[in-house]
Length: 335
Image (cartoon, rainbow, N blue to C red):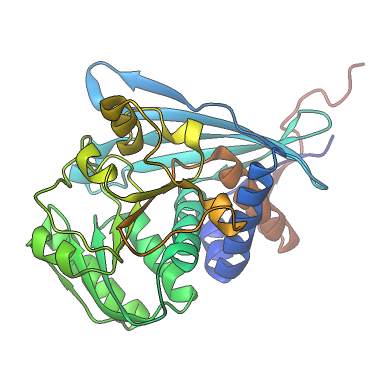
């Protein structure tokens, strides 16, 4: 049994910033491994609070098989009221467990990991699903950590951007994010108060909001060659979902918890509106044409957190950047 290590958020952030290409590769490989049945990814468990209906803490257990198996659990809190306190909405930890003994060997600050695996999934979806190679008009709806991290991964993959628009219910946040896009990535960017006009002109739409219920409806104009990254999962109305190509990360996970795909299944009583998973597209089992808008809805698999977190742990340990707690387990032997 090895000693216990802690990886703080600053270290996790450093590793993520240094290895976006590696993290995207890890996410891609994990999707494919999951599609082969080489993972264990139970349903997430939601701890909800009757007096705070918008808040929740979610447990995501997972096991990753293969040559270097590892198990673990992400425990992530989502408290939208934090935004009014100028605090990040989400906070999280990731526990890594040894696959042979079951002993936990590391605890990592995981809000950065959660954002990175979501952003890597988004960048992978753009590379896999977006039609054509040309400068894109990009719309970010939601000016938080997820949107910012998605922009970092898209920039790291050299996405050609003509213009970025940022919409947020607090325009000051949108202006701050637009400045970040200009200063950090060199993109032309500005805030957009008219969401309908912004949606009508965007080639790529990144939905990263805290919306509890669908707002993107038939009243908005979408384009056939448009790609929507439905990262916050609850923004798109079923009447829109049913008309689009729909790619998920995992059918059974995504069709739960009142997500837009789940609400569409409930309203129409079918899963026929779903084309397949991102792994299906990567493997050539599903092809998406540009005859309709394409929506990618990733529920967020625990195995992705696990795979990315394990990479961050190993990189941090190799650099001597973990905090070791040799006596974390008081009794290292039975006798």
